Length: 522
Image (cartoon, rainbow, N blue to C red; front, top):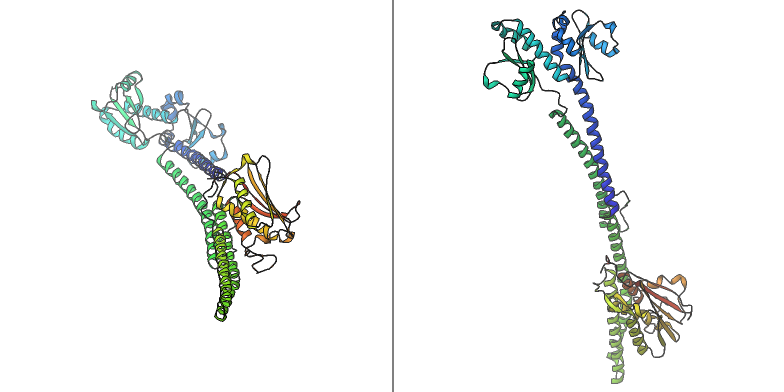
């Protein structure tokens, strides 16, 4: 996977994770701020309603004032916000946050505002309720306590039960603390409890609802639902982007199947399937090129085959009219030459087609380019003794002679260039060989008429011959240079033509890397 694509996906994932975390934090804080406010008003409401219903609650429960700053104030004696005054006017219990905790406010029966300051709301409310229960139970006889317990339990919304069985007693530590203070707060089975000792020595256990829990299952369920929703939206957007890109590739594939070979996929840096689009476009270009080459070959082959076939047909007809052995042998030799020409043409066509359709299976190996150049020069000098064919090896190239090549095809490429130069040279052909640490370069120059600059690219086109000749003396079928270019392409190099500065004719050059790359296609 490319580093750029990895970083892009990583940043997207990191951004999505950050977004999910921020959404969860904001949602958790917002929901819990509301939940906490509601709990702070709902949990102490039974206690505050109990106190508000008693006009003399301050005097009756005077110990609340010393412990929790319990007092009754007139509305004009307090600085309250408009919202707080409005809520108090509706008879609601209001919890106001302070630096030390919360302040509970409620309007009493006398019209005054009951105020209770708490630093630890849950523990202090449970203790205050337990103290009120103990105060009331101490005032009645034991036989009357059952009715009082029922009334207090319903009014204060708590569970009250006398402890009569030793098995219901809490741990020893709790009992020791109870013996010291007469009241102890402890965590029972599932919720908080307060145990008080009456003046008669009887133990009373008061159970309360659970304390405020910011991690309640409802909050966790909401967070999981939100995270799932965010991930679902992100996945939908990502899949939709990939799906749209794949649909664009699919539509182009359908267009190509219908014959629109020029259709291409539009890619971009932000496209998750840009690599697929690039490969698909490369495949489409290759298919278009193969189809074009096939059409050109069918057209050109039909033209190239027509001439030797016509000569063979004419020769066969002439054999029927031959009167002597000498004329017969002459016609047979001509027919044999035409068949040889057809064989060479078919070999050229097959080689070109194999190179165009994806290349042969190259088996690159270390071979001496200098030896190949000398071998080709020697072979061509024997074939064309009337010409001077020379090899010019640059000084210092011998140490870099070994190159990763397919010897048979590089030999074929150099041979095609030297043979082509020999057909047009006036008397001299020079093969220059320059090798260095990185590249190999072979230049074939001749002293012939050269090639016009406007035709330099045309000469590498299949079946192109600039003299438009179709005679045997011109030689070739217009495939030699096309084969050379394809051989160099599969070696990762290039073939190009120019003008020879020293001889005045054409100069054909082959350049390819001396050592194949690790990711080279072979």
